[in-house]
Length: 218
Image 1 (cartoon, rainbow, N blue to C red):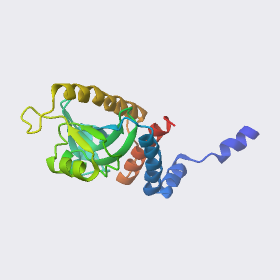
Image 2: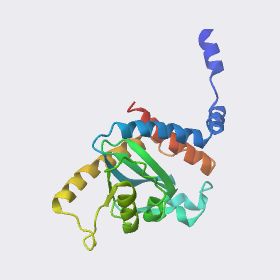
Image 3: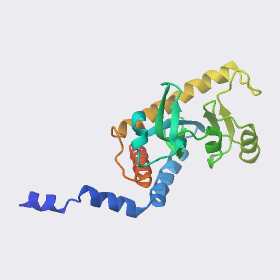
Image 4: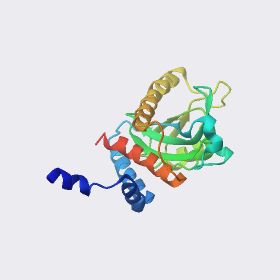
């Protein structure tokens, strides 16, 4: 009888989803920021990594039938796998232990530099931010260095005007491996496909998976 009453009081899937939506994305993001502040305070080395990972909303062959997103800007490309995807790309800043500090979801094809300019970079002075080579913005590098003493160090191309020493590149390459592990662990939490009927619902669930990943460290 007790078990029957317990099951009776459980929320249905649809009602549970409605309650999640009623809480609102700003509150979930505030929760993430509180956790991220803890991660920053526990990062004495002040080294951070910036990179991105794709979050497909559907298989490439189903793009024409996708109702959540319907614009070409959501068609992105995964260079490491040499294939296209349709959905979002999450740009994320993590500390050197792979704990998320800040993130921005953007359409799959959005220019990385434009997304980079949306980051707040509320980091301690003398922090170093290692990034993928796509995050090249000399003007922003100079601004962060002069205003906040934050060193933005994207991976330099061979023809870069700001080449780093071979020793620094080795440290950078070794440190950036942490972000790959972080992204793998986050996406392992995702189901095979994130079920949603609206773009707002899809993005909210993606945020909740990221928060769930963060809570594992607490």
